[in-house]
Image (cartoon, rainbow, N blue to C red; front, side, top):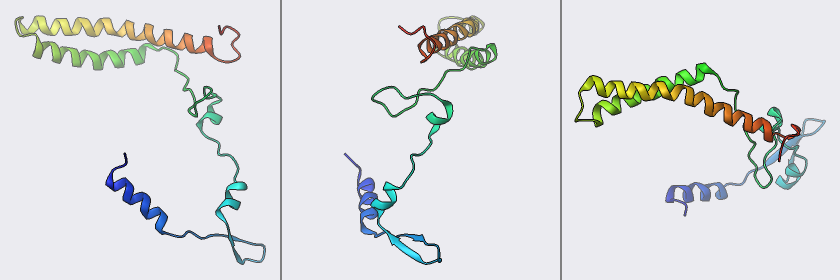
Length: 138
């Protein structure tokens, strides 16, 4: 159900008349119907055409190719995760001393780095395997 603001915005677009004009060879402006413009319009080249990825059947969205796994990206994610887990473990684990709580958060952060690298590799290999033309798709 559209909101009142969305309904008002849509109604506003119907209140105005739009004139489509094209300049001819002599420089005169000739009014053209909107349907004539749409008929002569070339299909737009979206991001799917640039990347070479084809959308799945039944969808209009192109599949984004995952980047190959890298330790740099895994370290960045691990750093963010480490900061969050240290803060959460210090705040939430009340029955244990603060250094132990921080150590637990740090342990989770250190374990998260190789796990992230492994997951990125699994996703990348699965994409390559299912990519059209790879010959390994099931």
